[in-house]
Length: 513
Image (cartoon, rainbow, N blue to C red; front, side, top):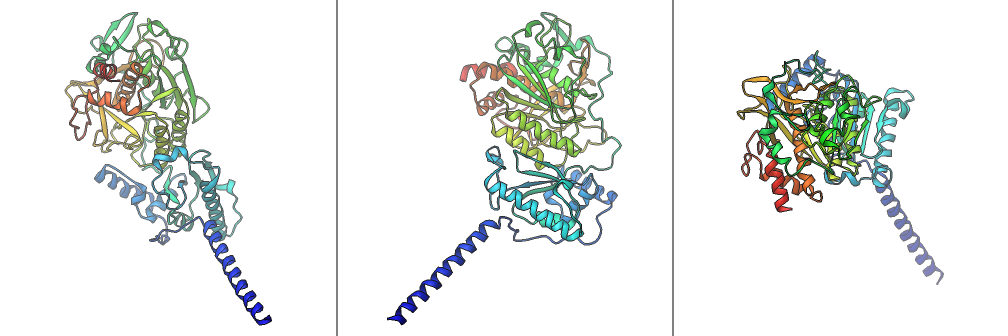
């Protein structure tokens, strides 16, 4: 009997021990949230590539593909680009095997649960590896640039090739990309900030009550005809750009001037610098086109002259080449996404390099119901070979470009398969005579060209349409715009559905929704 009891006790002990081991194993698996990919890359050998060779490789890719994705380059090229910049790197993270989170990124909680665990384990791994390879005591604050409180993104100052390779080999890392890499170019700063000095032609505008000027190209989009049914009242347009002028009162104290006296509001914010106002006043022109008042000051009117306006400064100029500008634009998307009053977003800035950070921001705002119009790109002498830029090329955005009166691409505009709509904004015989908008000060209009002005104009047209039936969802709004556009139902290979027709789109909304 004693022997039998001993045998039973032994069996129970073994079983209990096995259960404990299984529980410990399961717990260990749950705790081990960082999972390596099945085909890990090796740590690059030798030194990083020199800047000249690196630039040649990357520009060659851009020229041959009209596109560029950091995930397509090898580890040595990626590491070299990080080293040859301000050494900032963005890490998009997620639980292993989470798949594409684009459609649900607005629901992610990085402050708790699985995302918090991945975040904390990445932090622990990075610091442990750095301190092991460098033999020093590095703190998180030494390398941290931004720990996004809303989106699963870490931005760090990091150049250690072993740590970078380990990160890229994780299933938990959605993207690993340099934030500041840019080919050597003397024109890196100031792009799009210089206003036009071309003399104003009286044939490029008409005067309407109570003394406002209508840019010539508004007629090409049937905007004045659309005003018979809608002026944009009840809709707020969000504009993300490089800056506003403090001296343009029509976007300040005179925002409700003339026929725009409907109690609408204009507000400003910034995610870069210390103010919405900046020496680069590109945003003044964009705001003027989208929602400038139908005034009695002999200045140009905007498309949706009864719509509200919310402006966020997120860059120093229209080329998003700096790490701080990409981060600021992403944060502007988040702020616009979280505003219930903003229905439409206009963004006339971008970069030729794919950016997970910009994509995450655009996806966030898009998922929250915002309709995002983004510039397909405006060329200068040094960027004429770019295709549709980012974030316009992402599916969360509606890419818009400009065309001449004869339908050909404007002198400085980009086009391509990602373009959805076009706006006529340039005289066929003179590329200096393009659309007109508010100047940094005073009432005399200034010419403004490129896909930038086409984008702001398209955003204004969308506001006119949405104003007729404010309960329309985004898909219904897009149907109104697309089904009345120039080439519908056949999409052009480089110009999308072609020119928007504001009057037809407004009437389509009235009739169908």
